[in-house]
Length: 425
Image 1: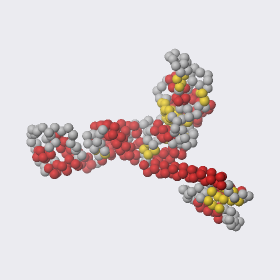
Image 2 (image 1 turned 120 degrees about the vertical axis):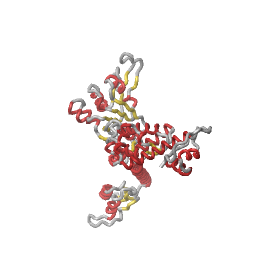
Image 3 (image 1 turned 90 degrees about the horizontal axis):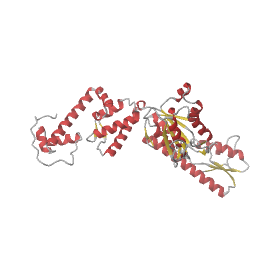
């Protein structure tokens, strides 16, 4: 919008145009304001810019210059609106790329990731194993200006220094025995993009000064070469160890620690954000059902309660594996507590007595009904007669207990021994 400050009547320090600018600044999503002022009144234009004006144009305005300013203002406004919409979408869906979470801790982490992603600073991600540190690194990369270039990931855990050095820096032909041809390292492959070093705390003391030199000089040499290679990367590191304590013990270089720790982001363990467990579990349930061609669509109340009460020492990765196992073992659309791994479903023994009783009764009915239907060749009338219940009640039970008839049921008559009646309450 345009704001003409030329005709504004000024009484002492009071200027209605500047007061209007201050009021507009209270609204977060107002359109960009371009002010029009007299060319000799430089102070008014400066004061307007201080109060949030996008730009100032002298009177009379140059049309070509004015058109360029308006085009830039429109692009800026559109970009800001898009960022606001993205932020709101993340808050509604509880999702940041492949990361999920509606808890306060995860929402704050998502907001920080969005804020620092466009800024080319080194990031140190901390958190226990299985919390999703690499997923956060990929989300930051995808929201950055380097998203069109590669993200190269490498884990330093349990590898000898010689192998890590070759993986990072690459080598020339003949650099060592067995080097029959030259090879690009991870640093070179990540040029113009992002390098993600997982478990940076496991990097040996002999390699730490070499990595520090790369960050300082923005260049490196392959093994067996003296030719420097210029490098333009963003570095994101992750660790499940306390690097500050390692610095105090002398097992991690202090100067490298400060180079890596420009922005630190901590992913809380799953036991500290239990409100995220249903969202994550349902997401893994859908994905696993599609992957394995299963019918599972939901968790029983006791299964969900067991998931929420378990401590998950392996964090999100352990939860994903547990849900995959449960989906594979389930037959119908509902995953029950006994489909879960023993470590997770042992908490079902601590369920309230009324909830445990109802669940046990339901599962007894389901097992009895399934066995009878199978023995009767899935003929409903025959099954109702054997069980001693009305056919309509049998159909209601089949629907309530989520029992599905197999597609390859044989139609051959089956001899069935009569069971004692009134088995189902």
